Amino acid sequence: EIVLTQSPATLSLSPGEGATLSCRASQSVSSYLAWYQQKPGQAPRLLIYDASNRATGIPARFSGSGSGTDFTLTISSLEPEDFAIYYCQHRSSWPLTFGGGTKVAIK
Amino acid sequence: EVQLLESGGGLVEPGGSLRLSCAASGFTFSTYPMRWVRQAPGKGLEWVSAISGGGSSTYYAESVKGRFTISRDNSKNTLYLQMTSLRADDTAVYYCAKVYYDAGTYYNYFDYWGQGTLVTVSS
Image (cartoon, rainbow over all chains, first blue to last red; front, side):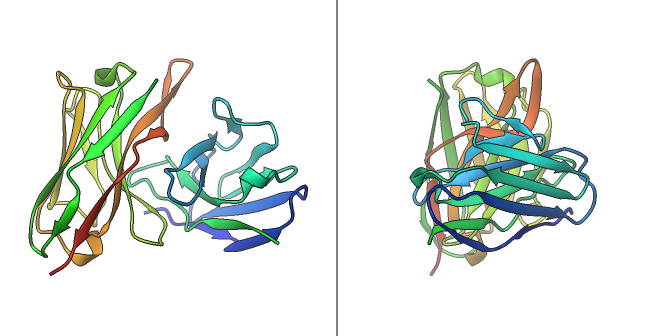
C-alpha cells in the first residue's frame, strides 16, 4: 500500500497570502496524484488531477506540481472560501489511498 | 445535473449488517465506474471499494475485504454496499463517488460525491 504523507498538518495564513501544501508518497506514483478540498459538513471537491491539471471549474489560483514521490499544491492568493482541509490521493495502484490532510486555517 | 443520493445508514450493533444505496442521476450511470469512500468522525478520507461500469470488476480495501460487497443495478441507476460483520471502527460517513472522466479517459479520482450517509456501529 502506498502511504501519502501530507505536511504541514495545519497552515495558518491570512487572506491574500499564498499557501504551499506538500504531499509525499512512500513510493513513486508517477504523476497519478489528485488534490481535494473539503469544507466542514461537505463532501470533498476535486481540485487537481494527475498532479497538475485543474478539474473543471477550478480557479486558476490553484495549481499543482510534482511527480514521483513529491507533490505540491499551491494557492497563489487565499480567498476567504479557501480556508478548508486539503487531501491528496493517488491512483497509481490498488488500494487507492489518501493523505491525512492539511488544514488551511485563518490566522 | 449530476446527483448522488446515499441512503441506508444508521445505528447497528457490532457484528450486524447494513446495506447502503446510492441513487444516481444526471449522467449515464452504466458507463461510469463508481466508488465508496468513508470518513470516520473527525478523521480523514478512506477509500473503501470500487466497481466497474458493468459491475464485473470489484476492488476492496483490506480493512473491509471479506465483509463488504459492492454491487450495482444499472437498470435502476443505483450503487450498493452490503456491509456485514460490522465493527466499531467501521463507524463513518459513507460517500458514494463518481469517477472523473475527461477527454475520453476515466481517471481513478472522484469528481462528484453524494452528501454521505452516517453508519454508527455501537452497542
